[in-house]
Length: 296
Length: 306
Image 1 (tube, helix red, strand yellow):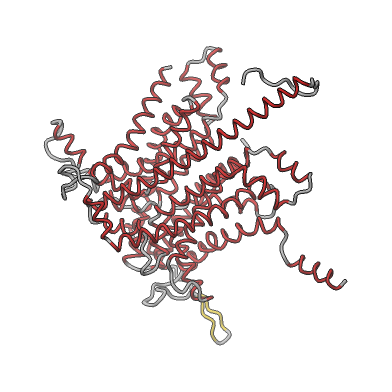
Image 2 (tube, one colour):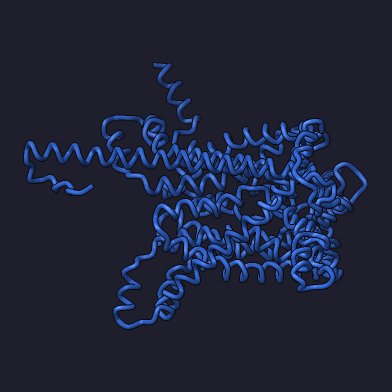
């Protein structure tokens, strides 16, 4: 029992350690004083000032655009990869494929960024594309790296699925593509949404990859923040950082909310099915059917 | 009749569904993840040049002669210059110590989450997961304000009367450790939790029925069973930290020598792409064993094998 208390204490302290700095950051973003360490009363002037900073707003829009494209592509690519890893157990190069899918999770970003940039430079020399590095190259870099996260999330869900539903559909004559889109996709939809939002957030955050593969005129928000932060703590940056924190918390909350609702709907459906079958078996006793649980 | 033949021929050329499903992600990952490493390897043998792109070609073909010119100078430079060796060792030490710290802090946290009530678990996991989606940049930035000489921590300690003059924490290795543990802790906790939550409680009950002390059964049952989670968590921290750039750049000082920072400077400040590539190749060579370990544990996890 003693150990249990110790671990709970660690959990509380750990959560404080994780959240206190962010909380402090948000509070100080409302600081009226220009000196970031002196409290000068509440104010929202730093937020208002952000709207006038057109360079910053431009990079925000660019980052959001890239994050949207990344989320869509990473979900498609990651789901395919997860499907292959969980359902197709034997094909040539499967070990290599598995490695390629999971390695981006841990690969240091400086290596990935450098190698992708060199690839783009070599491609521009050989086939003349990409002439200019910018949104497209950043999108490719982010998609490759986010697809790994999506693959992990989606494959966890795919493993839990009841295979017999897909098999039943196939037995009834549905083609594999139809089964995939009509049966598998709806069943893994919550994890697709989670993976998409995760990719969105990861893409919005990334500094290192974007710094390597971006070109002139395609500065993203993290690059903008980084060059300002390098020079020290500034109240404007506090405001930007708080807004990003707010956006991420909102996305996280939405993921949690939707996955919870989906889970509840699923539980309700299961319970309903159990009750119906219980009612059926009451009417016409069936020896083969196991008795339904009395207390649900 | 002719039409059918034509159709059959077309069908032979167009890949079937199975090949498409495997092929699309495979080709993407091959093209944008694996192939680039070979290009890095190639350029690490080139020489820096004042040109666009800033390196020399390593092979030339003229008058039916193919000349391959491998320049080993970049690797020789890495071996000779103490700065690079110190940076590699510094990165490895930093990564090792922070991994141990994350494990020591993260394991009890993961254990507490796994033994909490079911509804509470989802909320706690979400609380741990949320920071991993938040810009590492911002979380590190938050610490800059806290740790600086006239920052909150020093102000707090001075007002408590514990210290008379501000402690220099920002721009030291201590700040880098704090930043790394802070940023990577969730990556340690999540795989540990995923593993711990699957444990069969009856094993522990059986052990305690047979007279095993709580600590004994924890040490002999829980820890060995969570081996895969420990490996995954440690690798998720260790490997990226070796190449970490943002944290040492913002929180570290002149004494902080880490390879990610050196690579960044070689690339962006010195524009020496070949040396940066050689640095990346050596870093990858150091990390290849941990990466394979991680991929193995991940493959087991993905196939659902224990």
